[in-house]
Amino acid sequence: MKKDTGKTRYILLGLMSKRPQTGYSIKKSIENEFRHFWQESFGQIYPTLKLLVEQGLAETTETEIVQNGRQTITYTITEKGRAKLKRWLSEAPDVEKLRYEILLKVSFGTATDLDTIDQHLDAFIGRNEKALAEMEGFLAFLNGLEDQGCERLGSELTALCGKYLYTAMKDWAVAAKKKILDQKELEHETKNT
Amino acid sequence: MKKDTGKTRYILLGLMSKRPQTGYSIKKSIENEFRHFWQESFGQIYPTLKLLVEQGLAETTETEIVQNGRQTITYTITEKGRAKLKRWLSEAPDVEKLRYEILLKVSFGTATDLDTIDQHLDAFIGRNEKALAEMEGFLAFLNGLEDQGCERLGSELTALCGKYLYTAMKDWAVAAKKKILDQKELEHETKNT
DNA sequence: CGCTAATGTATCATAATGATATATTAGCGC
DNA sequence: GCGCTAATATATCATTATGATACATTAGCG
Image (cartoon, rainbow over all chains, first blue to last red; front, side):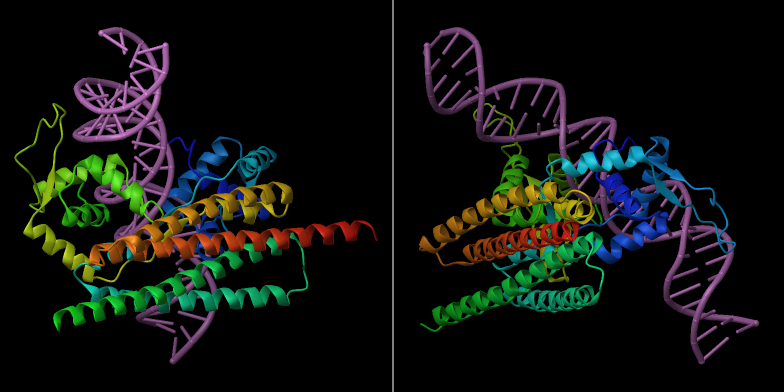
């Protein structure tokens, strides 16, 4: 494991730049705030954390063991780590990578399983509506805060992206259902003539 | 390599269900049609192709070697393969996985590098506008076709998804730039009072 | 007191990426 | 017809990422 090209270390450094973190708190933060556009597994987080310490980009603080009798390892970013983060921040971000399994099924299923695809789209719409509601709730919560600082701005912008994304995907699925209905009617007509 | 949970084999089967494929043609098809929402590497495609044959889901046709003197291996889906594909098609698709590096930078950079983030957003807008134009071109091409069959529908729906997606991301980035400008003005005011 | 959920660290088999190696052919300019 | 680049084609490998699992403690609930 060399970790010279992966992004994992930067998300760890980014989270540590806000406050010291444990492996677990990093995982939870990603699940809570970044879930919509990024994911990391424990299998990446813990080894990378060790590597960051090796490379002097993070440090484990004195309270390594025992907090309420429970083993916790708290990691803090170093100045070298902050510099590394800043350098990465200034580089042009990579093109995004998506894996939408539903689009695969739409592509391969419209020839043979129109009804199934229609059902998948229904579920997809539901899921996106739910996520959209969550995003809007979170945005409302942020607007209610008095603090108008920079950390708030980051949260607002990423949540806003979620809002745009979920809206678009929901709207697409509704449009797709309409097209599928048209196709079904077309097939029906062809049969009856 | 067991390939019992991965999705690679299904995209291979899906493409083979339309017509026989070589590893290379599969890679190109994914790059051309699915690039926006799915990607596969040669490192996955070739080993998986061999596995599909092992499992009786695909066959290599007689013309294994030599086509214009060049080695090509053509794979054809079997009935067992079609059944496997159909079963997968009927299962609820997994939740999509995205990796938008720019959102990471937005989240970590708004506290310290507002100008840099603004530049990243400009590039992001440009890239999404370009992709959007491509999608619209492709949709216009599809509408010009006489064939109104099912394979066309699949292409149309996936391209339409690209259109919705790229539009949303572009719109988000424009909105984000506005919010960043507001924040800058806020900071400026604070300094001057 | 026992149950479940949450906090916490850790590893491993499987899966996926990106780079690279190898070889042939097609087309282009000169 | 010679060299150049791009496209076609197969293949492997080191690195990176995922998902499942193991283990242990604590908090809260009935």
